[in-house]
Structures are given as C-alpha cells and as structure tokens.
Length: 288
Ligand SMILES: Cc1ncc(COP(=O)(O)O)c(C=O)c1O
Image (cartoon, rainbow, N blue to C red):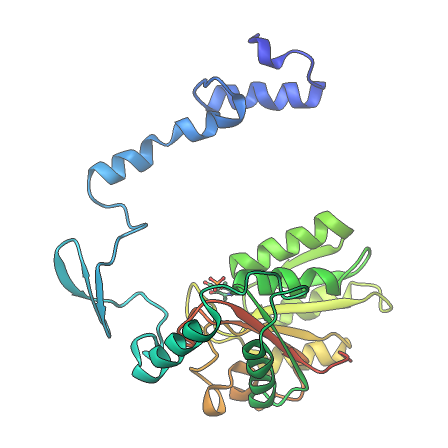
C-alpha cells in the first residue's frame, strides 16, 4: 500500500483504493482523476473538441473563429443586444463614470446608484414590488434557493433543470438537510404524485426552468400551477431562456401563460437576451 494511504480512516482508505483501480497514480491522490483525461486529449487531437473555441471578432450573428467567418447558431444573444449601439454607449458611459468595478460587495461598499435604478426598473417591468441583482445567473440560483429552505423542507425540482439549480439544491441539502425530490421532466402528474405523498404541514417549493436550457421546451406551467395550487406550494421560475423572448413584452414564462400574479418569485440571468453578465430575482417585498 503506498505511503499516502496510511493513517486515513477506513472508509477513506477504501474509497482511495477503489479510485486507485480507476485512475493512474500521481504524486497526490487528489489529482489522480485529472491524469485520466486521455479521451479529452484524443478528441482534441482529432479536432472535435467543442469547448473553449476562441472567437476573434463578432458582427451580429457572424463570428470569426479558426480563421473563418461562420454563423453563430449556439449563442444566447437572443435579442442581438450585445452589439446594439445604444447598449454599447450606455456601457461606455457607465465605465467612464464608475470605472470597471464596484470595488466592493453589494452589502458593503459595492452598491452604486445604477444597481438601485436597475432593480427598480426590473421590478416595475415584471410587475413585482422588489428586485435584487446578483453577479451571475448561477449565483442568483444559489442566493435565492438555499436561504428559502431549511431542515425538513422539500424542494421539488424538474429533472432537466439547469445545473445551477442542481447545484443550489445540493447546497440546500448540504447546509440544512433540505429534502430534494427530482420529478420527471415537465410532468405535472409526477409532481402531483410526489406532493400527495408528503406531509401536508411540511414547507415545499417547486423549482423549474421556464424554458429548459437543454431542449428549449417551455414548461407546462398551467398544469404545474394547478397542481402546486392544490397542494399550497409556490413555484419558483428560472427564466434565463424565457426573459426577453416569450411573454408579453418579453416578460417571460409566467406572462406567456397569463400567470404573472400566481408565480411569486422569478429569477433570471443577464447573460442571454440582456447582453451582459449578472442575474436578478423579482418578487414581493415580503414573499407570501
Ligand atoms: C436556465 C439557466 N439558469 C441559470 C443559468 C446561469 O446563468 P449564468 O451563466 O449567467 O451564470 C443558465 C446559464 O446557462 C441557464 O441556462
């Protein structure tokens, strides 16, 4: 047995031995999985590695990569705002006035008047009382989901929800032992089955993508809401791919179904139709 397996508790020793069978040996056991990436190197060598492709120029839907101008069909610049003259000018003005960073967290020294203005405008646009901005869409999921739940509560999450929700669910489970139930994709009947088996008095939350990031399909919100309402359970919408695209004036999935008042909390990213980076959540000042 190599020296680094000594003095470890039996369970860790056992799992390391299992890993040893799967991974090549490196100086540090923790890095063994990293040295086992032969498949990735093979794909790269054959020129079929799809990740981290460098873009050298963008011109609307056309981009320059690998020395060629190609049509970009895989981006999330849904409204084409990234290169819009008005948006670029506003970004430049903001940098001229505030520099390139808020130089502090929102809690302490990092709130500028632009944050407050944007929060007000987004809340107003979404017909909700309140809005809070985050640094990324990913962080919005983490910041919204985990604080809402606690020990013994239940999150019911669509199996096809975005990875950021999966990660937020895991954080909730890890930090507070929230129960996570992954229901069949877009299946209100499965949600009903699951909810009917849970204690009536338990606090529950349904979380779903509005437009699913993998397939592009729209959640069956009306049926999901009918079930949620029957079991007194709120729905949280991740509208990353719906905002700006569906619903009245681009207000997203709840608006698309005429359910704006029935969905208490919607969160979203700026990295798709909103031509930027960041995220936001909207709801009433005191969720109810
Ligand atoms: C449905 C969904 N939610 C959240 C996110 C996270 O947003 P961001 O990449 O801006 O952090 C994404 C991004 O791909 C997404 O597709």
